[in-house]
Length: 128
Image 1 (cartoon, rainbow, N blue to C red):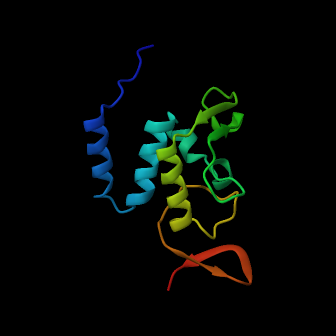
Image 2 (image 1 turned 135 degrees about the vertical axis):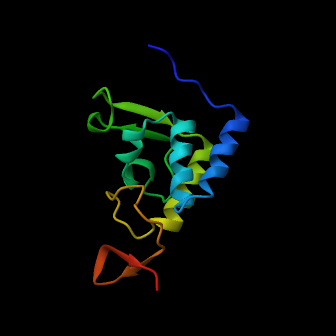
């Protein structure tokens, strides 16, 4: 099977700059970074949960362990997370997914900043 061509630095910058023109800039930037920096496939990125990438200390993990259900080949895989990608993940989660449950999807359909509802600790609502 033919190997996919890897983007050079100039092309990557162009793609990342292109995410600035989209509705969900930070989410889309993180998707590109997960694909490029960690080598994850689209289906693997879509299946990520917050606890897959974030440690209990509130920082991004150094490796992402993909379970069999998350991978194309149905085998457990491990992706190494660069320091640059760790910063992107941590910033995204702290800004956009702070009050989401640990087992909630990493990438949400929107980027609303959330406020905590005391009567429902795992629910999120848009900021007012």
